[in-house]
Length: 271
Ligand SMILES: O=P(O)(O)OC[C@@H](O)[C@@H](O)c1c[nH]c2ccccc12
Image (cartoon, rainbow, N blue to C red; front, side, top):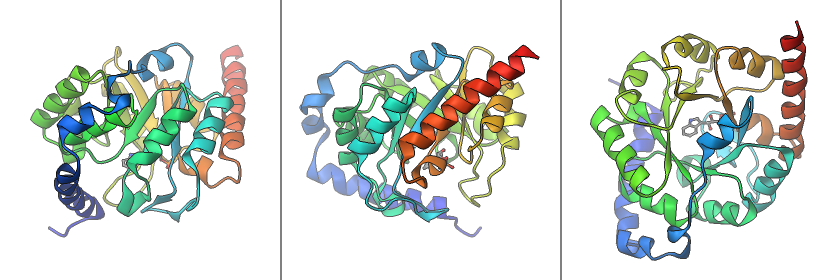
């Protein structure tokens, strides 16, 4: 089988985690000031409203290239909060997304919203990093983990007071995610191997996600029409990066989408 960019990212990540462990042990991470704080619940925030936006901070993406190479996490995270986002997502992968753990810490100092650490988690060490640098939620990508690993990392994350967003792209992924008490299931509309994007993934998988699981749709979302259609399929949250980060003012773009979605939702509900 030919290897994909996802294989490359994961291979890279394993080497990176081994190197990081040598610089900072789990013991040392546990003594960082932010490690002891009470975490916030993204799940609760999403359940408190008809829908919520999880606005993402990313400078670069392998599918699109540079988005905002010099972007500052403090400024943008604050703008997202002021725009009315329900949570923020911060990319911490360096080689492919030009993010870093420090962006998480900077973001933490700027907002009282729950923060998702967006990275490729393959080792429990990264859960300790997430907690120590200010995250409230971690992403587990079903495609790169076994059912056992999803169960183990979910347990570990919960022990640390972190929530788990488990990302799925197809039925096989969803079967794995449903074997663990994850807090939120996210359907990624983008195939991480081919970068092909289709909202059909969210629409089709919706029927198989248990009713009582908070579900979100991720990637490739830009219009109020898309969001309302997905709200009607039972989605409570939307993870959006590119559409905001390509705008000169990501916060304004987030605010406009929230307002347009509220308006459209009212129109549809009034029918
Ligand atoms: O920028 P978009 O198309 O709005 O997508 C955001 C988010 O869903 C995407 O960044 C993402 C989804 N799953 C991931 C896993 C790793 C890295 C990035 C991602």
